[in-house]
Length: 259
Image (tube, rainbow, N blue to C red; front, side, top):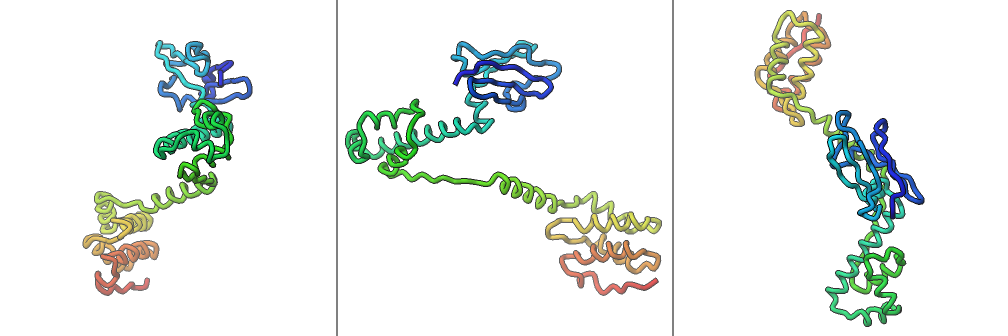
């Protein structure tokens, strides 16, 4: 496929690539040599030295690079290109299978029920106009199985988001943060909101096996005994104590006094 025209869009940060039948947008982010504000695209053209099957762009600094039209089509997920790629992969596997089988081409063509010239066309990597049905029959004859997998892009996207959420839930509080939170709980003049936040911080120490250290447990225990402590702070302190080595009993019985 030949490129008829190409231009750079600095605002959209893409190359607009035109062929006889289709127009594609190829982003700067996919380039090996990235244009910048300081070094923008100075020139871009279909490269005649490559039969106009690629375009070359040159930056203001003089640096240049070339992009083949197949890279543009692959990024755009062009159905025609994906078909050509699929047929090419089948051809490569057929050539491997024929070599490993030890069968002659005339023998294969007879078993396939086709002419020798047609078999040669099927085995030609440059021939893109092939019957996929005949290619599958050829591969089956050469003991090659073809598996076709269809995936839902929406489900893949949702599973990716689910993994990201799962990773977000595994946030762990570091030693310094835990130590700071413990000191906050021990201070008498600390506000209710600060103590609540400190208790929440300590509850994430060493997740997912959340355990609270001796000092933190002691501070939380004092918070629960203090009559001046708010219910919010007591709740946070209770959460901290519940994670003491995974058992609430390890800190001893603590009775919460009513105001």
